[in-house]
View 1 (cartoon, rainbow, N blue to C red):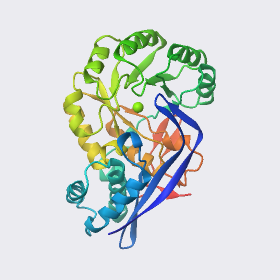
View 2: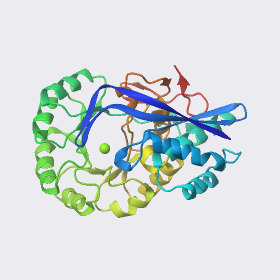
View 3: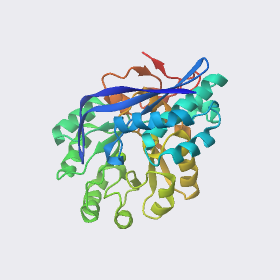
Length: 336
Ligand code: MG
């Protein structure tokens, strides 16, 4: 198999702010794996929070090239080799993983959901994310997003209660909040108890990633479910967060792709955890790959492609929040 990597700078429609910072461009990398007449597509959205960059992804792809072998169906062999070639670098591995699943689906002429034994009618509804801004502007954005029945509201500021009040005045949508590690446990307990009367479905990552005891303390003192995102990156993290949270947010870019996401889904279920599948700022390649897994999960937050201006691809579509999986072979993604 031959592999190549190309830069894909995704431009955010509006600058995207969370509690840690603001982003205007997401410097992603598209990976193509060629096998005979077939080409599989994958994508990396490297995040410096997890120690990656477009340069590190391209360096990984160059290191992976001699180790891919000639059979895309030998996924487990390929990934145990790549994990020996270099540790971590999950988004680089996710891009290769997606491209291999795309290849397998194309070679068998079946969509990915079918390859995985999943029913596309069970695909989830996605939330639509409102990035941090003034309460007035966030309410305006919530109003503009009225086609989406579920909104994910970024919080973790000094005026979170005002944000939720302003949004609730204009929206009856299901609201989820994501603090992206922005609160201390004490602040989180106070804030979540104040937000709870506004009909919030759950709270994502209230406190620092490493602070599992903080998560447990928050969970025991608030009336809303707590979901771990930054605290739960790979399958190894799952047993550690049991008892500290009600559920986990799985992302292909954190865990290294579809095959690892499937492992996480099954391990999380065995521990009685709720499961959300989320994303970074990604084009339709990576969003569609994740969307194929949503028949297995409780919640989806797959709107990264909806927040950018220049997505070169078409794959999964959204109708009133419901993810509609493409029925083309593989990921089912086409270049526009
Ligand atoms: Mg999150």
